[in-house]
Image (cartoon, rainbow, N blue to C red; front, top):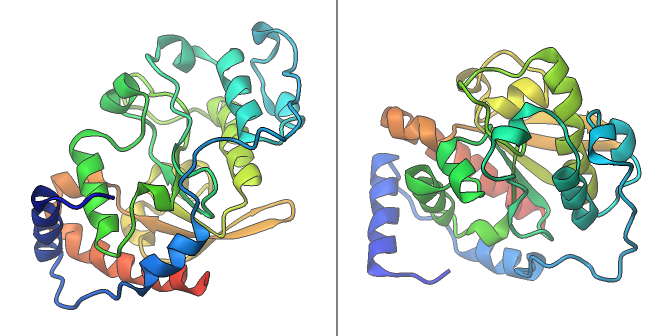
Length: 255
């Protein structure tokens, strides 16, 4: 990540607002450099799996997803399948950002209009704030595999129905199955509600280690306040700084 005077000032502003009063070691960056590969390309040697049926035959994707084992095939499956009306009205499908080889996975909230317009998670002001937060512990987007709890925005900013959760949650679970992350960062409340089925709320659960279990996978999850929430409620930046310190210690344990 190229450091500029503007970037340094943004980082300093974030740390001051968060009440930072101690420096973070640069050791974490050296360790991650050994672990993180910045190339976002898929493994071309992996066998390509044929996608199941015609789009109209795949409105319920769980059976088709069982045949998918690579990110490339998952993206093709999502793009070729007719899940529901979300995809029909969205401008873009949001698949992933960052580093496909990372073992630290970030699951963001349902995409908003800005993200839908650009086809990318964490953009505009909340994207800048996210970058400032992670750079405070020596990380960048290339340190993470970043995706959204679902690939499309929801018109009207409503919750998913039970039927919609049944249809869409297998997609994010397939992301997790393929990446096999060592840590999942739950960025905002949507992943708590939909992936972990917790209704306690992000304010109560933030900074607490939780567990994602699916078949033979058991992965520690760490809820953090969404940057968009922090823009509305900057008084919570101090809590987020405390959470980032906890997260940094866990990442160091990855070696």
